[in-house]
Length: 228
Length: 219
Image (cartoon, rainbow over all chains, first blue to last red; front, side):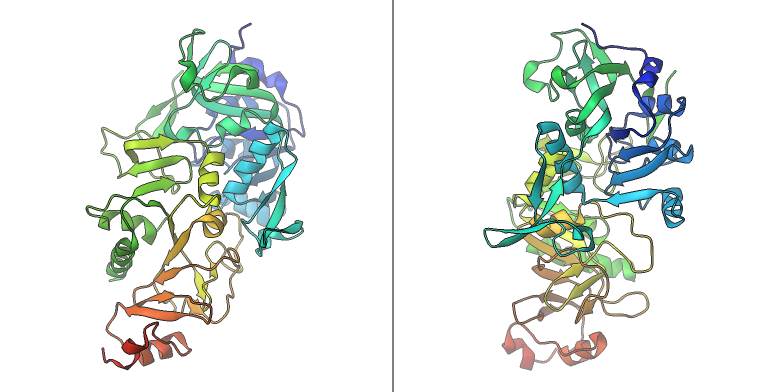
């Protein structure tokens, strides 16, 4: 069974109020084509889980500017001026998590684990309201797992089964997010035949992936540009 | 001038690093440390998923997917590896990073730092700061000792929001290198031509040398 679909075919997979896990660090590893498709939908009040809200006016920034995002959960939103202003005005809800806590919470979400205890952020403002526990004489706080209604990820290659391999630091949050969405959509640079990917190098096994689309973006110098 | 101070700090921190160490360099002054490593073989980790980070690319080598935690394009060296963010922070939190070099806004006299949130400004970014403070085996902070307004970043008590309860090992500033034994801050060495009395006056509280022998010696 092939999981390859046309980009516009994924619009129906989202609904208003969804929690969406979106891969990427800056714009590296961001599913830009999938985000563009979301712009074409009539769905609103989204909660976005992502390290940041796009960059350079691209990616999730577009979705935010369209007013589709109600809440953002992530580690670094400071660079998005408009988001900072919206938060100040009470128009955007933000939940800030340390980057490692964000990554691990998503990993847990996909692995059937309810949460975990970490030393990160103990004694800080980000620990407020979180259960604290002493383990082997050290203070830890409890962090709950994160899951999504839909996970949108970016990979370098997919085969027709949905096995994924990534490219350099564009991997970032994508492999965990690919495990933690009820529906998982991968955007890739290249789609290859089954058997073309070396099993030793597959990072995301196809069992996690529901749909694969061909990316419309290519790298051009310091930017990602639409190719067609 | 301030550019020089930043390089003095970076160069001094490079001396602290040892062959074979896995090191995470934060943004700002910490990034400059890489240019003073000379022949030292340390392995740079960047928390967005690379161990074995190399210098900035030439235009030919540029690959915009390949970036550091400051989102600047980088390269990778022989023996490098890529991994996802959860694995990257397992490396950090699990104590597998030997040294983290971080920028900071304040350091208290016991070595607790505030390096993520400026008061009275929207606080919408923490990144990997708290994970690195809590998890790295050794934490070195890098900052000029005084703000642009002349306020000391070494303070009796943090007035900015703490980054965690773990104390840092070393604070390398443009004036002096500080360490933090249980009874409070001590000066390891001066990097600027001032006496300990003069520096005490500048920061606003009495400072002592770690090695009392230096206490009595002149400049």
